Image 1: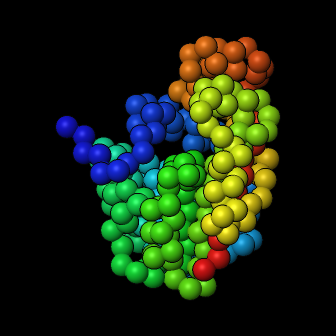
Image 2: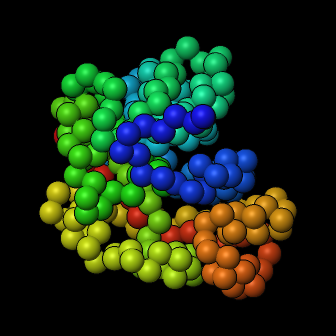
Length: 232
């Protein structure tokens, strides 16, 4: 039986179909724009980096190539196990099965924390932000990379899939907590059409996914995102 950390927010796409989400990870941001934007604000060379909601650990090896220590936290026990296996040969990587609002780390333990399409911060997620304030050292930074639901076809498909999502309330939440934002014009690029269609089907309701597939020719689609950050 899969162990789920208490208080975890389900992520149906990767939790239910990790093999398809792997295709999505490979397709997203081939230009490395998200990492470049974060590095420009707070580099992580030689730093201790925390990846919140690391899933199967896709980004951990890349982080480990520059950081002195990388810590992955993932609430889904099976995915955390896959992340450990992925990083078995990397002595500077540790993976914990835990939730974002209950990080198994001491105070002031990390220099850079990031959550990438993993923890939908917004109203009600204040415990996660408090944990970031606790574990990030002075001089460090926290980043959240997430879909921008207000832009492009992807944002429109997301809004039709999750009609209760309020971009206005989310923006007000971040403003109240003193975070800054930057729009990221990312893209997804796939090797074959079947992979693109499979990813759209795990991201949206069946009706919306079929509409998205019909509206998307070829092997690439724009993926508007927003980078949010706070210095400590």
